[in-house]
Image (cartoon, rainbow, N blue to C red):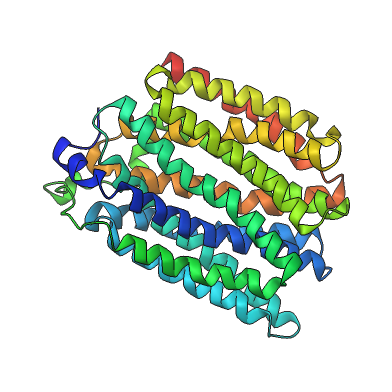
Length: 397
């Protein structure tokens, strides 16, 4: 069982709120930029395909940075990767703000650069934050509790950021929504500085023992976890893509679209709080199988949900199912990988998740343009059959 040591856990407990708050701030920068950029390009008449391209860009930088971020977290700990991530988020948010004063195609280029940098910021910072949080757990039950709190970071930012961005757009304009994104990375670094520095655990004794992250894929348990993680993350992306497109087509205001997205994130937050309370009663793989089944059902019927209230209800149920996934996957991942390679495993998870995220939104945009806007949800419902198979194989292994 590969969890944090007791001394390390004791030393981190007091700093744990600052660790989670840092993740909220970094992720909120990305969430504000994602929602505001999507609505901005739709308002400018660029169409659904452009939205898909921009959302794909949030995952491009993590493809090149995730494994490096994992190695850096194993080697240097918390502060260096978080500092780099906060800097990337700040520069990306400033680029989006500058786009508002830039005419023509150049403004779209700056928005694209902003999406690229803000996505990379989350990847670099989140790996270090997840690794740091795992150090405070001493048994599997504590791992589920810790990673439920870690998973609450993105859930909280996804609950607050779309609503805040939508209200700012409706009442003040796109400039003020992008300006909010500039402030969030600065807050993230201020919070990160409150986390005490400590020496990372010793690395492998010889160079021959330091193996590449891909070597971890020899473990079938980790492979099945990654398949489940990819499928469920893609469902999250499909929902994020479909809601602004459908909401815009139905004539919903930016605030209404923000409420639909916020209901999804609020449900994800609620289920993660439940995991914190009842972690010792939960079996990771059984919980994952139930979540996959519920997500499949909601994705199939989402197209027929009536108006804003119906979309909010469907999004809340889907958020409950998908929100339970990350704590279970992260807790299980820390149990099946060596302690000195947790950063590599987390980086590998980030890499494969974002690899799917690069292709999926672009494919969603093309599929929605060629057929119907809800088609991406139906596609993901069919792909979850493979995730259910992996969950059963992992349980029986």
